[in-house]
Structures are given as C-alpha cells and as structure tokens.
Image (cartoon, rainbow, N blue to C red):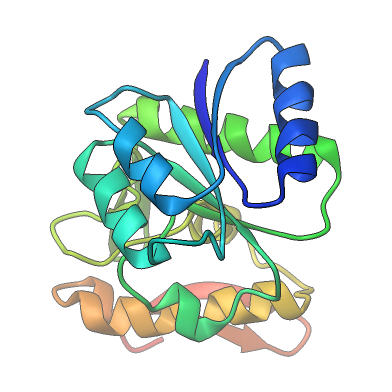
Length: 203
C-alpha cells in the first residue's frame, strides 16, 4: 500500500514511518502542509495520514486537496473529536486521537482503505450510505469511518455508549436531519433497558 504520512514532529514521523514500513507499506513522508500539497496527484496514494496541526497550510485546504485527488484521509487529532468537527466541512475520512497504540493506526488504515475500495451500499432504516464515498447516498452529507461503523452496529440495539460514541450519535442525528428525503425521518434514540437504536418515521 502507498501511504502519504505527514507530521511536523520528525521523531514521531520517523517512528510512524518505521512502523508502517515494517508492516510492508511504501511510505512517503512530509513535515508540513506545502510538502503534502506538492506530493499529491489523483489516486497517487492509497491513503494519507496527517497531523492535525501541520504548519504552512490549513488542514481544511489539505483535506479538500485530498478529496479532489480521491485519496482517503486519516487525521491524527490532538484532542477529543467534537460534534463541531464531525459536522464540519471538509471532513477527514477518519480521526485517530493521540495517544494511540500501533495496532489502532494499523486497524484504522485497514478499515478506511477497505471502505474506500468496497463499492458497498449500506441501508439502515430510511438511510442509504455510500460506504466507499463516505457519505449518505445522493446527498452532500459526509460521514467518517466511525460513523459508518456505528450505523452498521445499530442493526441491533446498542446498550452502552461511551463519550466518543455519544458525540458521534449527536453528530449523526444532525446529519440525518439535514440529509433530506427519507433520511430526515431516521434518527438514533435511547430507550431504557433497550439502549441506542435506529428508528424511522414516527416510531
């Protein structure tokens, strides 16, 4: 797999590069936003992994460039991912909060690239998700890897939810409301003794 990896901390950059190279990937590195932009080309990389606060170019602009070049993205986030982040535009395909274990990074790379190549359509209630496009089908509403995973899991009621999941649920409900058509009638609710579940219409 060809990976574009960018971090302004050169020690961390080398650690990540070593980890991914030992895992069999070809890794191109950059340590600021202008270097990332100069390295881009349509489909040139299977995935890009970016530090959230890369110098010399705003993250939003880099995410737009990656989307234009059809390169999936993972952002290494310094703090908790908020509802505001998940409702923002442009949106990374995934966010991984520092600190993380090596296996967390490997798993996320695998999940994001598999989704991007899948051509899968996921239907939940009145919602159709274009999995490979990371969006609600037929709309401009973008979804992250985590949000897609959550919608998949909600085929059965989910009894517990940590803070990170509750943030995703709040963002997803807002996105469903804004998606129009049948999606706006679908929402995630919590019921005592049943947990979180996806409901449609007037349930």
